[in-house]
Amino acid sequence: MKATVARDVELGGQIEKDTTDIPSAGSFAVLSDPQGAVFAVYTPAGDAPGHEGPPNEGEFSWHELATADLEAAFNFYEALFGWHKLEAMDMGEMGIYQIYGRKEIPLGGMFNKPAEMPGPSFWLYYIMIPDVNEGVEKIKDLGGQVLNGPLEVPGGELIAQCLDPQGAAFAIHSKK
Image 1 (cartoon, rainbow, N blue to C red):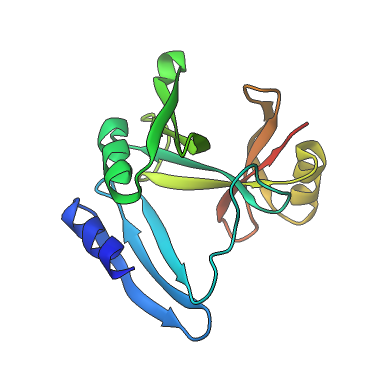
Image 2 (tube, rainbow, N blue to C red; image 1 turned 90 degrees about the horizontal axis):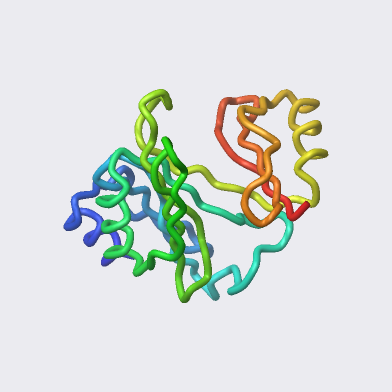
């Protein structure tokens, strides 16, 4: 953990909250990249949770970075976490959507944030659910807001980008 925090700073990032221990759980730190996108790192006290391969329902399925400088951001995360460029998709006026991963397993995508998208660089996390169409109705029923979607992405899967009732951004993702 301490080596990752130190490397973040060495690469031009910042420490937002230094390494903090959680008794019997592990330790975490909140960092930011040179473009200002905030993220956290975590080291569990025991075995690391998660698994290789496709996400199960209820797990994070995609990690998307909207950044001020795609190439600089990718270089930062490659140096920090060892991520690799996978497919690069030309999105026309939106520019390149760079899919990245580990061991050829896609983890997410990065793109240059368009001027009309407010705020600083940020991460958006997608959660795998059984059905996005049902999910957006449930989100509305619970007082959340759907910002974009449902929409189909390459491969025929569906996504929707949302806000919870307190204003936190998240996204949902389903195979159908």
